[in-house]
Length: 277
Length: 330
Image (tube, rainbow over all chains, first blue to last red; front, side):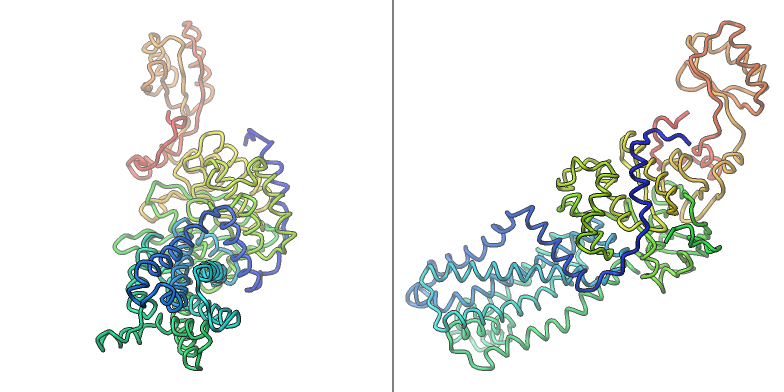
């Protein structure tokens, strides 16, 4: 056989003649590695941050200054009610990223390479979800920070705000499992974000984020009370304003646990069996 | 552990009656293979012959409908994790991350394979240098050319050197220079002890790299054996001649027919002609006869039949879907 360019072959031969076998990566290390991957991708495309922040900021300004006066008498008064609610939406909008990322990996073939590696496969999802937690913190900080600048005064002080952020992060984490599952089965990434908009916006608007349901017909009130997002908004509001009772917070946490118990195993199962049959 | 120490008679790949259907389509329809360690084995067939489906089943990515497959004695379904410790996949079936740099991709692979932070970095740097990607190490993969991408893809598969590498159409869409680089890399890999299963649509590529070849069509193996045997089964060698003056072709044809005792074939190029050439002595006589009448030959060659011809003989039709590269056309 003729070797046309020994320049290529010789260093390759040296590099691949290393026959070491590292021990299997631990589940934790595989998860952290996937988190790192997300951080690197973010580093290369920092403009993502603007995409992430645009909608929460627009919603906050639009509703406060366009509808606030009509809803609550004055924009300042409305802001006190509205900000803890819109913080829920800021988080919910971030929960779609994992689903989109997983779907992109599947479509690009990156997923197939991962699946031929001997690491704990759910790490690919877990790493993405942990990356989302960073997004939640950023989204909440921007939303609440802007709110404070506009005159939001939380009665619960810093501890109240931090507690509310913690509950919303837990809530967001649970919801992102839903989109992770959708991300595994969807045909293309655009379908994931499209589906998410169909799911998210009706739920957001039929919650108590924007208005209290007192003036609604009773069937609508029931709808609002059944909506998981209402429970998150109630917890957020009560904690930020320092009026939280036990069930205000527990409602949100129980719903988060329920969503996770159903959708986390589902997402992992779908992921593991993807294309296997 | 050295790859070919693992042999002890255990084949690198063994399949029996392997089957997979997608709806009505039988993508893989009963494939039996036994491939020893340390070789390059070529799976040759046109688009849609079932090559990728076969690789995906062997690489634990797809569950077979029937039959069995084992890699170094480990079942691809029941012992998928053990199989994954021994294999890598490159090519159409697996990819690198566009949103990361070359170095980051290799660090990612190293970490997921179990290397510590430091060692993963070192290994990435070694592979970047060896695969001639130093100039682009810190650039996003989305900016890479096809050849660079393919080299990174193979490097990613070699982070931990596998005992068995699946190369799914590794040179599809590459320019000749990049293709030659990939071929050299494949030769280096097999020299290092890695067994390689190569799928290709390029008859020339299977011939160039693989010792044994299976020709697949519609999910079945229609011929299998050493490349030289496959060719021999099709027929003997052929003498190809190119003349300086196309006007002399009729006379040259008569001379070759007389000396070789077989009819000549006239190529589309008016200066070329060819004829079956089983006997070396008669070839020399025939060429002598040409120069005896001052018919100048620009080039001549005695070639084994191409795998194109093998495919034609085996299936009774051309490999119509196979984009045969220009230089391999007679």
